[in-house]
Image (cartoon, rainbow, N blue to C red):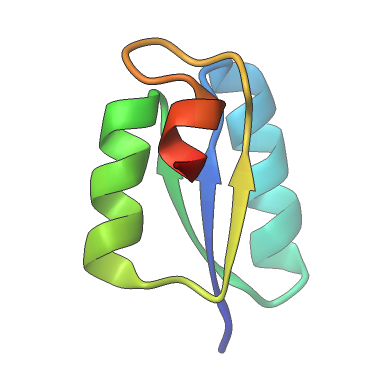
Length: 65
């Protein structure tokens, strides 16, 4: 099963995306800010990262760097 990390600060959107990914058969982990997202990416080594660019703590651009 492929693993996706979703980094989205809007709780409603992240819940909607997570449910859609789970329904499609993906394992999904969610982070609500850039710093937590970066830590989650480092520790889980996902197959795909869905990354919002405007995030608290670290922006999406900073996470990409």
